Length: 494
Ligand code: NAD
Image (cartoon, rainbow, N blue to C red):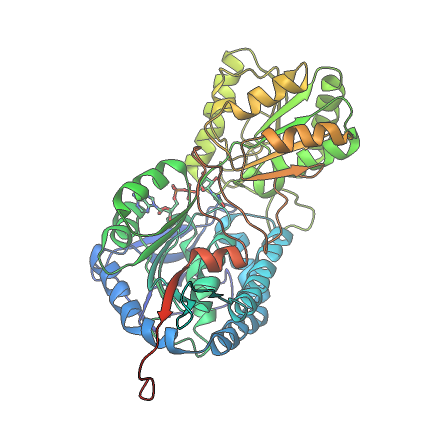
């Protein structure tokens, strides 16, 4: 890595990380990176080419068998070393995350904490990736299963949690013996390169992890279509996920895609809790969460009280510089997501929604990426904000008259990632747990609640993807089970 200095002090020039070396893109192209918070240039990043992706895949291929031959205990020790070095650079990584992604420092701190936890847990899970001895129909045979890595992994990740989403695949992938070529999102490449620079301080074998920055349809696509990758792990939008599913052919894929998580608030709910948790699900990380509370289906008996209270809370949220102590919410990460907020709110208002609070960009900020915490009432099913994932700080409230209507609306959309219900009735809880078409269901908590050792993923038949990540579930996704039958014979030389 060239020209490193303390965060924000001057422009940092990042490179690609291939085979344990920092190198320029073969095309020589670079891109200026501006902080969404200040608009100032903070770095330059290379724009990689297909040839760069090929170099990364070749390096991973060369390193992979060495990783596989290490014992699970050695790879777990490597994960611990990686976690240690992240802890040593915790503050620096937190600042880069706030600067490059735009989230407030406390949220960036939590994300770096998650990286450390996931690295340590991945090593532990790999040590316990036990397999079976299966009874045979024949007295002289032994049948056992062994677990092997898939081989070379193409990992492609989004910008909302640039480290948090990636570490799930990097940590568990390495822990179980895969080598990785990683394409981060273009708008958060700088913090990802900084992260790899930190990991590079360990004895990570050259080629075990390679970073290729660049445009997704170029370097990301190359990872997917190239015969040199054995499997693909992707977190991102349903649209890109569908392209990847088509291009990956028969390669194993894990696709963790978008959500439009409805949260249902029934008339028997603890309204204080519902208001607090839904607000958290709408406005944490400026709403840029796959499991955000994207549609709030509120019973008519409590709707007015709910709207009044969530709007009052939204008005208390301090929108501002991620580095200021009193900031609760920072800017959106990029121009595309900000334009989406404009489009969703405009469409909703045209079709009869009421803007209770917010509804605009904040014009007193250094960039136009700051969007006011917004509460929309009178939202209906034909509005785009109801149909599409907003991925921003909007709480759209739809009124429902009973639990049957709430269930019908909840399941009526294409997504099925995370759904929530607020109710004090066990009967209602059971009704929804049995019927909601969602990979994750949170009762009486924010829709974004997730513990990193538990399974996360989309409901079958919907557009939120397939496969599960989270602790042992990621280990299973990123490895294959081999069936070994051992018959009688001369074994002396085995
Ligand atoms: P995106 O699909 O636009 O991009 C994701 C990644 O894919 C980026 O690195 C991008 O460069 C790359 N890419 C783009 N086109 C590609 C192509 N043709 N081939 C290969 N790679 C390509 O998504 P985004 O805007 O970065 O992220 C937001 C989305 O991610 C939201 O829908 C959100 O819900 C979803 N997400 C899901 C989860 C989950 O766990 N399910 C977690 C975080 C984010």
